[in-house]
Image (cartoon, rainbow, N blue to C red; front, top):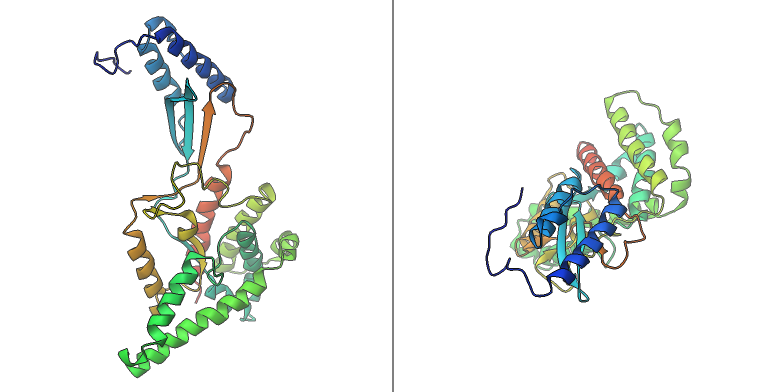
Length: 321
């Protein structure tokens, strides 16, 4: 349990009765909202009783899926409880390669896998994941920088290396534009369940494809209007902050990620940019219990299901030969 050590910071302020009343009014709103039964603390005396109440509700609100921080702050002249919940994406790059889908759709023996994953990709595009061929995307700029460096200085390379690398760069453009058209039609989402039900698994690879697609279909069914960036704000970070890794920088479609020269150059450029950053933006919800409890029941359930599915999808795509 917390202890109270007398200091200048813990000396009882002159307006202690008002502060105590504000804190317990906020605590009541907090507990009603979350359905928490708080321990009896008021008889311990101010300010220790408020510190004890804060410690109590922090423990009772803990959720293994999220980082949860309960704070007592002063805003608009009143002391109140605030809750910040964050889904930690784990310092990972969620880069979804499109070249494997291109291969599957053009292979008659594996076209059914490609058609099923086509619906998955359509849903990911629907929820806002950036596509590297879009000029507004972070990775579009990375590919453009690599292209300028490569194509404007061909004499810096061995002829064979130059032709191989230039071919990879042009292929990334062609494949990206082709896949973009293949997954951009919203009607794919209407046929998602039909393709899922018609899919026949004959081996472990097809079973894994079906399992991943089934997970995304369940997410689509439960969150048809979900958006990957719905909770990308509210972290107290300015959007002009160049020391932050933003969500739209580490979540994106990418040409490929299977270790060819171009993939390595993209990854090197991304890591070089991120090394200059001090923090990452993660999905976050902030609730304030000042005069009234928040009306919405917004949660991070969408994100807690989406990101593990993205990891499974990327792992599957990296195994496509």
